[in-house]
Length: 107
Ligand SMILES: [Zn+2]
Image (tube, rainbow, N blue to C red; front, side, top):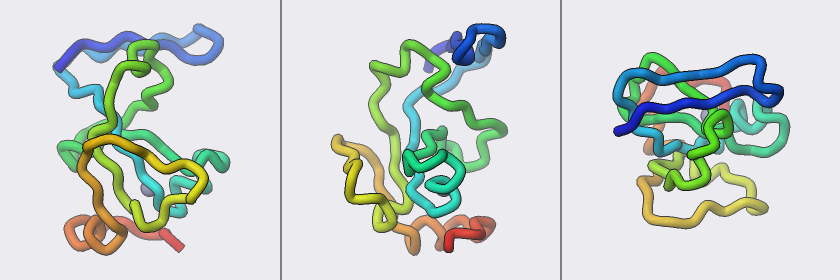
């Protein structure tokens, strides 16, 4: 757990996370995230706990260069061009949606 400081691309907006926070990002390969991220097919987000009150883009934080991946969901929907390596939790679409019925729009 760590406190985080980051900023937007131009530096006009800064972000500070004052409470303890696990910075390890999660990756989602659902179609909604692929479309929303503009084609990079990944939207990094904190997925633990699943009911976290906010998500932050790891790219806001320079320290993110050293953060290992925590989890990866919709692994069976990932684009072949960017496989993610490492030892982290992985879940297929069926595995993820079995425990998260609120997920919609992955078509
Ligand atoms: Zn997603």
